[in-house]
Length: 106
Image 1: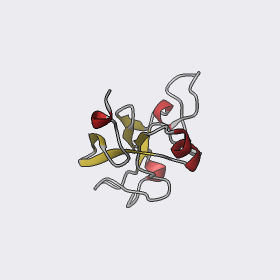
Image 2 (image 1 turned 135 degrees about the horizontal axis):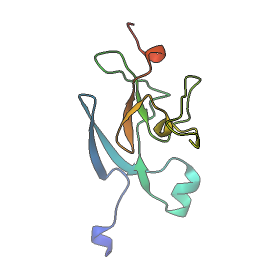
Image 3 (image 1 turned 90 degrees about the horizontal axis):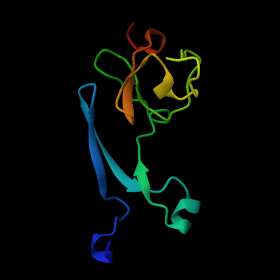
Image 4 (image 1 turned 180 degrees about the vertical axis):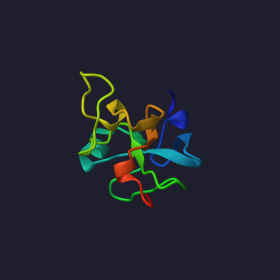
């Protein structure tokens, strides 16, 4: 890849449609260490710090978010990520937690 085509911070990685919304995922850094090493990666929304819910009141989650106390693995060998939970519905990056315990306006 030549420098003209190099990925830069803020460039769009992709747009993910989920639960009636679209999320634009951009390249960036999670830490200063990544910036210093030049490890630019797609930055997913931080739904734990800034929750967003569907119209039905279910929270959005990233697949790699730490599981909550309502975690129920799809298989016995789940790793404890939201993606492994039976309540997570979505892509391999962003989904909706369909757990009624976490739903607003129950």
